[in-house]
Length: 303
Ligand code: GUN
Image 1 (spheres, rainbow, N blue to C red):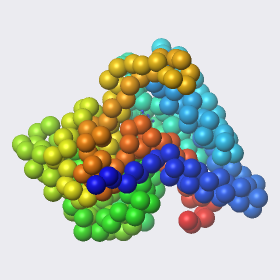
Image 2: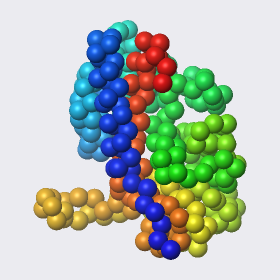
Image 3: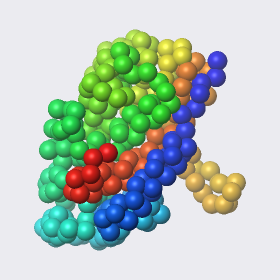
């Protein structure tokens, strides 16, 4: 059997079209557009490339976009003051501080300084709490897990009563996706297990997963024989395992591998996400959706 590919690039296109349409409608009715500020500290090539994509996507959707590029040696106090400025700015609905931050800055302090009602990353403890409570309490699910859930729903995979196994317990992916899948409601109502580096027998848990979500950051950790035939495999791993010359541009590019042995896994699973082009594009997409939602909350428009 060859698995059905769940392509993030295609689902992204669908969702961005839906967002673009809503932005136009809101602009016509309320004469306002979603406002997003992206704060980048330093010059890490990976962070620059992520932020550039976020800015490009926001602009293409007709958002107001403010780019705050700050030097590596910005003081924590100055960064906090910058966040305070945008907390008070009525035209801004979303504040994104690209992580990681330099070592001299306490990232918890920075994330906690963002107004929870502008925290479109969903990392503020208030939003983590809202996610835990579930239902109508939830404002901004963190973007990567939000994207994963949307991919599963749009692929038509049944989640109600499904055995979901999450590999990895990070605050950005593992813990929130497990929390989301266990709630009542759309794309959830599943039986969820989180496995991690302390788990005794990873394989035995993975083998019973109807939906296997892998966010471990270990190239090809999940072996083909761990995959339940016909199951849905979501690979969140983006591991740089080397470099090659791009046939298209002639430039050096990273060779990326997921956390799952894709070539073999696709012969066993029913659904699978590729790397790249799977979960990756969904993170930016859901950031845009959260920013739109933030404006809608402010205007009192329900979805
Ligand atoms: N760095 C890597 N992923 C993310 C993300 O989802 N949000 C932010 N703010 N920084 C990141």
